[in-house]
Length: 230
Ligand SMILES: N[C@@H](CCC(=O)N[C@@H](CS)C(=O)NCC(=O)O)C(=O)O
Image 1 (cartoon, helix red, strand yellow):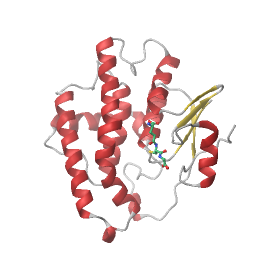
Image 2 (cartoon, protein in one colour):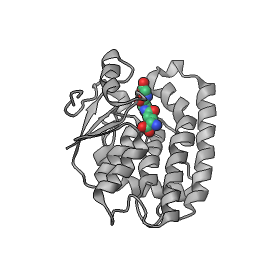
Image 3 (cartoon, helix red, strand yellow):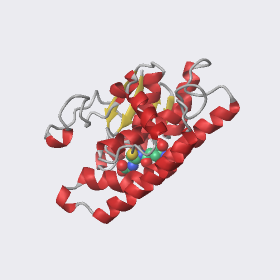
């Protein structure tokens, strides 16, 4: 079975979980913290960049999420929507993933890090304001790219969705969800959240739909079975 080493709220890990879930490929996720000596030691066996996610599938070890989602599409073969068949749509899907990883992620980072790691009294309002503005700029761009369509590239759910959904999920979780100024994005995100893959891959630290907000609970996140280093 495919193994994923990751951190619960890591958007790159969530991206890969979404691809696996949409492709209906059985997999097992294990928690690892690259910031700890134990985590670094395990990662040193698998990843030259020392980051999560890491994917292990038998003899195949991958350490870059954008390669992992392409690998998942390859495993499923033709017919799966993850990678659009048309060259232009495939390039658009990959460009959107690139934009999500390289532009949306860094823009949103300060909001997530301030609110996740600190008590409200210690939040740096200026960092949050700047980050929120950056995220608004990203939404403005993405609204134009989506342009009223159901998906970012081609006619179906692709690696573009895998990359973007976690960013929108994290934004919503930390109080800067998509704004009504961007109707295409509002409709798209609502449709993505309604897919079974969203509930199946939601970080375990997030409140389950219909449950009280996790920020108000003290329960520690639980993780599925551990993968030993090879
Ligand atoms: N380009 C990498 C980026 C992965 C990445 O930055 N992962 C973060 C977690 S979200 C990480 O492992 N950071 C090191 C750390 O947390 O110490 C990928 O897409 O796989």
